[in-house]
Length: 184
Image 1 (spheres, rainbow, N blue to C red):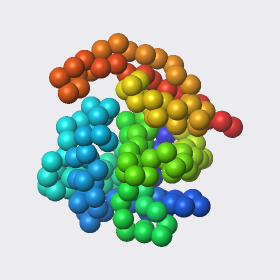
Image 2 (cartoon, one colour):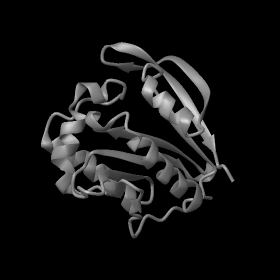
Image 3 (cartoon, helix red, strand yellow):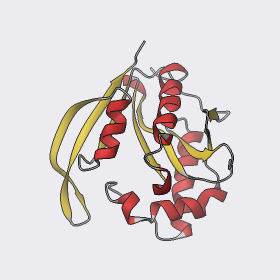
Image 4 (tube, rainbow, N blue to C red):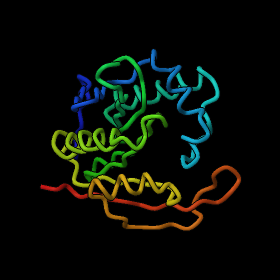
């Protein structure tokens, strides 16, 4: 069985990014990002309308890390390490199956610049290497074409498609399921 250990928290670096632990100080930027209807349009979660809601979300992430049940990194640019511009992480870790779901979001002004691809590559390297995952899954709204393109570019294969399996913003929405097996 998979036995992840996120203590001490694994800080990751890429050419342009610092992937660090979320802190309560990130709450204003988390609230700003998660309250943006354009960012959240394909995410089956309510908008984060208050700073208190953002702090609750951060607390949930920190508690999952503490229990070794999930891990999310704050995405920061190396030249602004304290500024939260997005997040990426493994959640719904199926320890018995060596499998996890991955999720991510990024500040709209930085989308389309390869930043999320860079973060995704580093996090997958950690997941398959350090965590010893066998597979990683991503569930997305198929209308989110950029997210599907990101996953395909990273080597994910679409394995499933569920029609109207969840309720989002007053409508039933579909889910596309992508997976990536350990590449080595």
